[in-house]
Image (cartoon, rainbow, N blue to C red; front, side):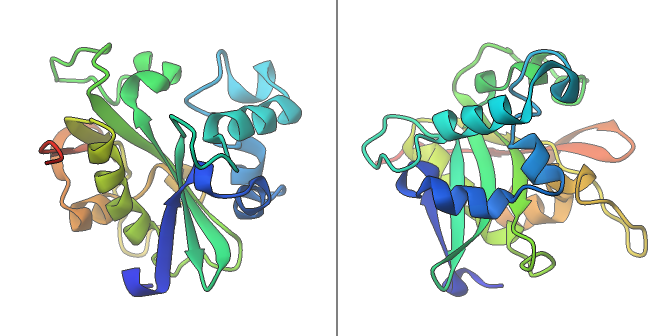
Length: 204
């Protein structure tokens, strides 16, 4: 799926119905509602489905094109909502603070609002396996830069030919997706996870 087939908009410019169509209700995205790095405690034990859904709706500010902030981007193919990517300041994800993945081997200020993070992809059932995460990852760069980010990070998985990874595991994205977008590997904190980063020049 190339960029010419896909349009990507900030989530506040999408309707709630479109966002809900991307996430669905049955599998991992539908259950999580992109709250894994947001909620306090352990996601399934300490929050309800209704709470997570309400949180996503509030965080996206969907249906409000004039909103000052939003929590991600929505992809469309031929007018159909098909994909999501979460991208915000790194400080917007409380669960990242306690995770060793972003910080291992790096002297990073956890309170630096100038560093943004891409934490989650969701692709609608029926559209998976078509490479939609590639244009979504590329779109995060301009989105973050225009909102003042100095750098953008991601924490994807390493995929290997012939080795299956479940969609639930791969919600953070694949290393190749970010490499294709111009991110560079800056840390390898676990055998299957890397930190990818791109420095962003200010908007003229």
